[in-house]
Length: 482
Image 1: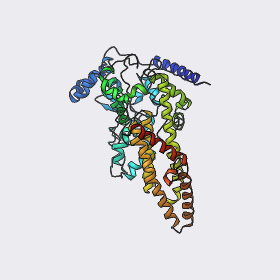
Image 2: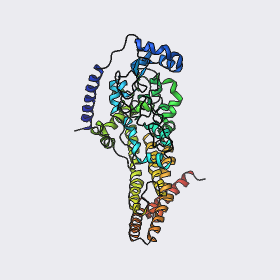
Image 3: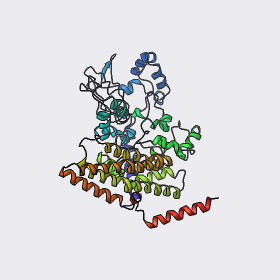
Image 4: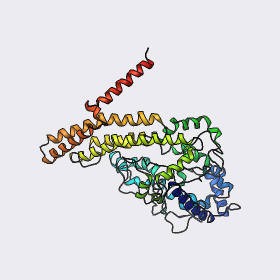
């Protein structure tokens, strides 16, 4: 089946789903409910900031108030009696779905909604064990928690929100607007992670800084990369001209000076509707040691995106790009991007994985109890991701100096010397199994360093490459020398 037919089939399925969901949506109230009016009597005084935010929102204009969002049924895990009304503090995606079925359905099948699943990963071991301890004790966690995880990981990725016996929310898990938060009603996600309460401004949600709460830092600096790129430069120069507060916001029609994160990953084009599944325009998942196609990671999470091939998603993103760029420009960008991914994979990621596997018998069996664990983790998790994300968003400094340069420097000056030391220690250990393992690691190291990509390091650069470099240097001097 051709890419075009696959894309058409997916578009038809989505249009049918959207139509059926839209027909089931709640009708807009004609006036504020009596229950909400009762809420306002107190909260206008006790929470004036919240009241003013709500009064400036589209919800207020649509007569959707406190009670419509916070109402709950008796017996729900986080429901409690509040002056005669049964409410819940947490407004979950299930609550938002009363009016926003299409959006919540798309979000539920996205990676954003599954972000809390990182809690059992290697990353979280760092925050819970290496950085933290169990000294943060609460009623819901009598055995304690790591304050590093609670204040760090959980605030972006989300956590399981625990309801105490008296109906209060455990302070280790609330407040929390992590985008993959696991709510008491069983739903995954937090709409307010992006649509900040209580005004839920669409303009704010379209702003790149909105995404920067989570998408920044050493391992996924998308915000910094964006502001370095031509897209970010254009945004800063023209952000007052982008009409980001408009209900209709189609790139190429309603604005054209610059894209934001939302433009490329979520917002409407002339051919595509808004989507809350941020993976439908991404053609590489750059999170793992070796990048994978997004349908592979969707399959691991049990998401329906497993049936949407990467090339269909790439066509979706190209459709966004073509609002401002021509076909050759867009195609050539993807050729450059794929080449960087291939370079990182073949020169560093795959050899690094092979070397770490060979070194395993010589290491302490506890994750992060070895110096090389940190070296390798930062090489792929921080530097390798930065390089790949930098290339994906056209941030040359993050691709090179914060990316591939750091990968190469630490591969050659940190990882290789540490592996050589492990070989020597294993050889001198007197333990037959370690002597054997050290020989295997030495052989693997020799094999990799003797390959075309790495032989320069051991002084075996090919004569052809030496001659080519001399020729290029001579031409450079002839062109620019005085």
